[in-house]
Length: 370
Image (tube, rainbow, N blue to C red; front, top):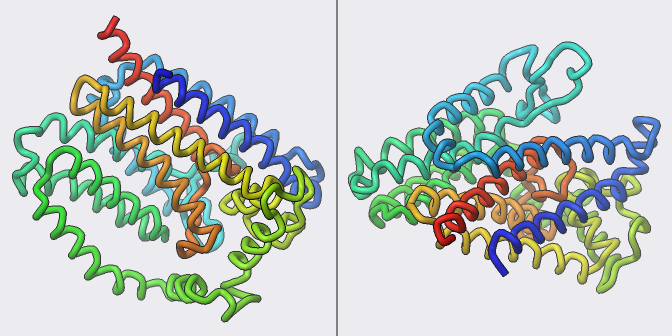
């Protein structure tokens, strides 16, 4: 099977599961607070239509053109990140400033956007383009390594201020992975890792609630009614699900026990209602997506396409790994959506646009082979 076909199968299946689970996990909550159980489902379907349009545009746009305009795209992303701090565009929620109103007035004023989702893809576009243009200088510290690192650092710092530590770390992981794949010196990469490890304790101390999250991660039973509540309710969901699950729609944890059950913790509801088998199918689909993306990357005709496909594949699957790791108690709590499944327009539209880019890369080497 061609990688673009297996990619489409995995993404389509994940989206299908996502639509079903968004409705299953949010129906009662939507009915109580918005008067109709299909509130989140209807919005998710709208996001899906927009995402399909975005994917079609990316599929029919030469990825080289996107890379040539990567500087403009990354400047736009940086500007949108700055808007998270500027009224009336700023849309604070839960003490964080991660969303903006693109249309603060009129009938679209209730639709928010999370710029960090676009920033992640923009960074992958920029880094793949930069390393393509500076292939002969990648081992040079000041010309091939520091400039893209400073761009990554600027993105990480502004997202850190929102505050969003997890996404800040993700930016550095993407830089490390793409720089390594492009041929950066091992010494430079190791030095960067050591610097990050040395600074990380001080960064965590800047936000006391991050310390509380780490403590609740190490021992959620220490504060079962507070910081440990969400992860313990997630554990209960998995326990209830067992091997085959309690049945679609029959889960109990979505009855206002598990916060974020249709967003960040939707995999817990999958585990409860579809069981270990259903959760394993979802994980298999992400593995298939990663393998498909990697196959596209290694068949790409140029370094830019290779790095772009690698970056997108890692970006999506890393999001899935972190989300599943969080809800299963393997990682500290971090608000990161499950790609293609969690409710949310920003992540869905950007991820579908990214898949369109992958398909465009795949079509480019198919045309050459023909």
